[in-house]
Amino acid sequence: MAYWLFKTEPDAFSIDDLANRPEQTEPWDGVRNYQARNFLRDGVKLGDKVFIYHSSCKQVGIAGVAEVVKDGYPDTTQFNPESKYFDPKSSQDNPRWYRVDVKFVEKFSSVLPLSVIKAMDGITELPLVKKGGRLSIMPVEEAEWQQLYAAAKQ
Image (cartoon, rainbow, N blue to C red; front, side, top):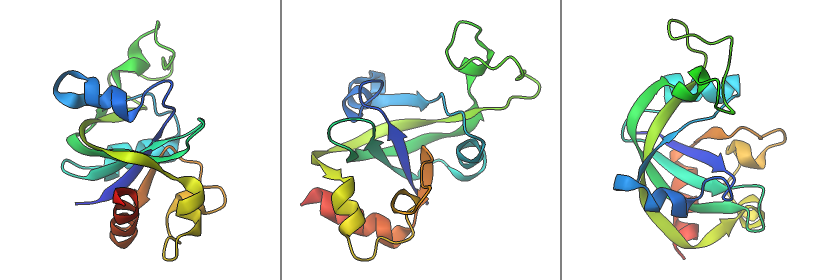
């Protein structure tokens, strides 16, 4: 099992939205960065744990946990001309973009703020705290996951 952090803007899709979906499950689609796509296509696997991170909002930080319930598969929004994620250069035979399905696990009683995450000893490998760490999908080392999870549960 691996650990990940998925960023989302809560006004578009939040941990509460995930919790309220049928079966508390949703495709994680719309990712349009090649490195993040590679993680979804090649790295993120069934059973992996995911921090849901709220960004571009008043309370930026880790809001809860989800679990991957379906491995990477082509993101169907790339084929829909009416979707904001449509990609005319993508085809069914040669898809460019991938997604995974995630299922709600838990919402923390409060968001673990980015400012607290950055101040934590031992959180040094997480791309979120490094310069240029702007990806919407990023790996989390197991030791850092455990530390962040414990801090979020306090």
